[in-house]
Image 1 (cartoon, rainbow, N blue to C red):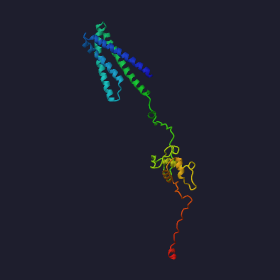
Image 2: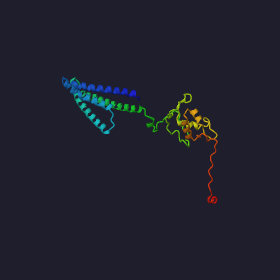
Image 3: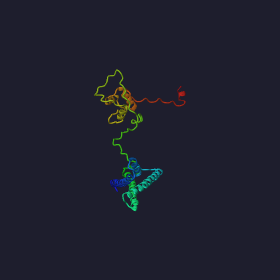
Image 4: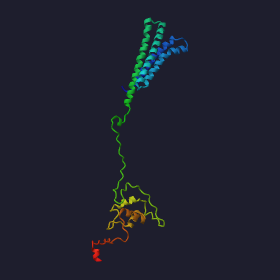
Length: 272
């Protein structure tokens, strides 16, 4: 059955139980004395049983000891209500002209209807609770034992530049704040220095031989770095030195000095 059908059946079972309890309460009130206190006392046992059945059907129990204790208490309340209502209704039926046999059988029909209605109500409540638990959505990782799939980030991965033997890994080094220009040097125009750039980015651009041309000996002119990146001469020299692309002024075309010959053993004494 669907949840809607089970709920409709529960309302029907509750209506039947309420009707049987109302008949029992009516018989108890008719048997009591004509005052409010006596009538309330006579009507209390079936009313207490109705409230007990509602609590059992609505409140679930997960501990066996508590569930067993509740059933025992419910059975005691039902027995008290049945005993009191039976004799009250028997006396009322005999008072209003019923035969002795009929007067003793009529209360059994009312008590039997109360027992059936209460059992149906408790059973329907359990089925509704189970159907509600089955209809609840269960996460995929809990129901199938498979961890949830995490969608990859759509943003492009950052480009990691290869490490340089002189500078190391540029991606691992934090970007440094631009150093202030020395005092007394006029600031460059906006056309020459469009934006501040860090040493790491300059080093990365210097590795591109197509973007930054080299001399014949593989070095880069300081003036070219100043014009390309809009930096001062001191900074250009520092970056080129760090990249191993700097050549001091006046050293181009000058051959390196050959090492002096090492005298052979005994040659010094001969020469002397």
